[in-house]
Length: 201
Image (cartoon, rainbow, N blue to C red; front, side, top):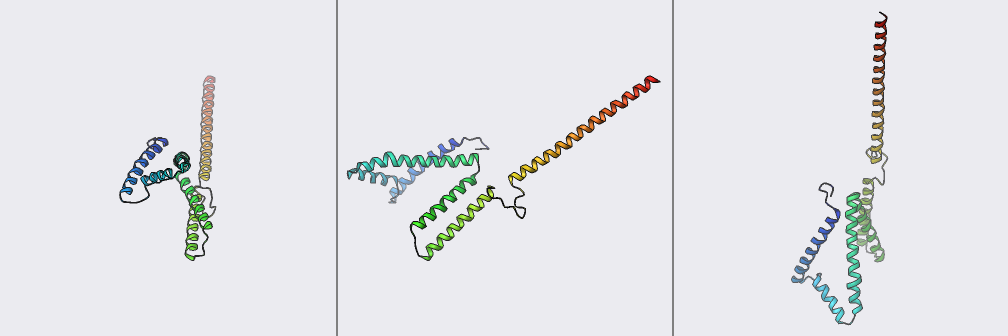
């Protein structure tokens, strides 16, 4: 997007078209190999709902749930691409990290288990999410580590160093200009004195 000046909306459009073709092909292939997660079985299930006389479920699925799901998926992709374009890809990783951490926590709380393996898996998964979130925040300078020189190359410190360097260069240039002006004034005075001396003689 930055190097070739490609519009983020063009990328979203190409992503959607590619996803449509890949989804259709994978659905057809999965139908022929008797894998039941495909679009043909989905529409067959909807038709059976309509045949059973539950028309409200059919129309609710077609006109409310499916368009709402499509719209939310489109908005999710759009926000991710715009976040990458205007901010930083690590913001997307951080939001995904927070999403999966919270969903893992809610899933564990809703399905409480005394099984040691499940509890161990939950603790390790949450620790990894917390560590990743902390690392993203350090990288994005949301959290500053002010020890062992870890804050030396922070964006705000680089800006302050740049401003300080600019001020020092400006002071040096002003001094050089003043020095040149003083040299010019002294040269002019010397010339005037020489002319006066010449006129007297």
